[in-house]
Image 1: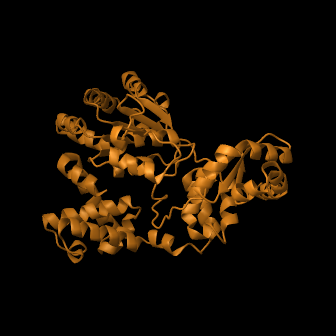
Image 2: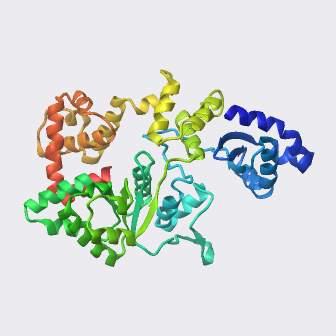
Length: 425
């Protein structure tokens, strides 16, 4: 399909020159290049944002007419600028979320909740062509809430970047944001319920701070937790602090969910996050590939974006397969377990004032032991296995599992410790 598009683009150059005139063609259209054809839409790329805006405003209809005539079917045209962003450090996806048709609504809503300084930065960075921000008297940018609700539910299939988008938003917030994965919330609830301290967890979740609960769909078949969460939502609604859920399913589709809880969730702002669009896939693959996506491997990257239409993990797997054993050095550094461990170790050592030698040593003082457990937890969250953590700590995998288990019990009992760990993640 990409080869067909390129051949068509070569054929229409002279008709375009005749339609708009030689000077206009050379100034604005000659630098365009086709990158993708999907669902009757041709995606063209301009050399700069200024060029893209100009072509979009003045020549989209002409381009669509000429290309449609050559193809023999009605086509739409989308214009984008070549991204100048550098993604020098990757985790499981680019540093900033990729905004496209699949997640634009969720992004704009989250962006509207950022304080004015962070929101202004987003506007300057141009993460998206549209913005919920408005100019106030004196030229000061103020965030503008897009919806009156303080409850938000974002749902979509696995691998579309729901959790990544929410983690990005949390990093932009100057306030501490409470974060729970639903399995962790369940364990904490079970622990305080056994100790008859449910009110403590209730008060913690009702604090006047943003709250994010990931994997909402895992609340299915847990009536006691559903009733508890419903009580939390009532209190938080009165306070007005944002409460954000992510779920694999729409609230109506979560199995065995209490009717009143479902009604409360549906009263909030519910938005779907879909699989990445054509341009989203291309931007993601270019971010993984780095500079070679602009020269050398550009055709392979564009062809891969056309061929693989799944989630971000599927795109990443296809990209790695296309590279074989020649992954970029920066990427290899990111997936090197030792480098990940050393990065986390140094961060914990600096945070607690404990030397790296003592963290990885045999000392068992309370302070060293707890810091070591937190280090193991952060390493696990960064994707290291128990065996890898144990190898760098000089301990068995079973010992690492026990460390994580005892830390989880401490987290269930101590809100202060949970806040401490949240600040490090």
